[in-house]
Image (cartoon, rainbow, N blue to C red; front, side, top):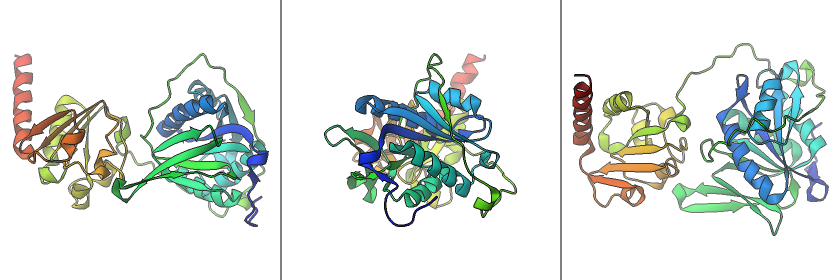
Length: 344
């Protein structure tokens, strides 16, 4: 199937005007990043007058098809096969390539997850097209009729606007948490197009022997984030205590992660996760762009820092100049007293 002659699978002259989203699954439902991509893709499709299609691969997908349509997909292209039950990069890229060559979409969006990045890189080579990776925004240029992908670099010092004017599909991976999830509309019709996939074990060089799912944290789903930086000197125990008392989860900037005070999956920012909490409380964080991009979509940001000139105060909604190390135990004591009084 794959043509390595460096000629694109198809170009703008033969595309079908449609926007596709690769739909990742979490068990028998859509992964959070897929709901986020469907929300943004629905907006782009409406602006550009494109049909919004989901690309779904797996086995026994009826429930996920309906969910994808309710979150905005017009049609879901289904590749069902026993060899697609679990993610296998060779099997998924082989099946996706067949579907894309049949459907010839204008645009293909994928989540910048472990699986999405793996699949996107393979498809870019197999289809001989461009790939814009780890995008933080997407817009449609009506005049040119092409997708413009925004990518940040050099600590936010550079924002690159990337286009793929000729080759198709125009591909971009988008970091989880960048866009809000789509609103679910259970009245939307469920439409699917089944794709017969010609795949056998002989097409695969790897076999899944065992799968172990890591039950880690997902800060992108937290409504309240208690964030610690270098200024709390590794005292994340107090943040965990505040989160346990008042709700929410704990995140960190990169320095305490690098110093081993907290696990890397809790790192927020450009090289961590991007979150959209209702409230982000930032203790001892200077406010470098690397971190700010991780919480800039928060509804409310509260910052505590001893330096009145700290950049975090230019970004925060409420600013407290003070020693985070002294304020954290004071908050814990005050809330403990309030809770004791409430139960007295």
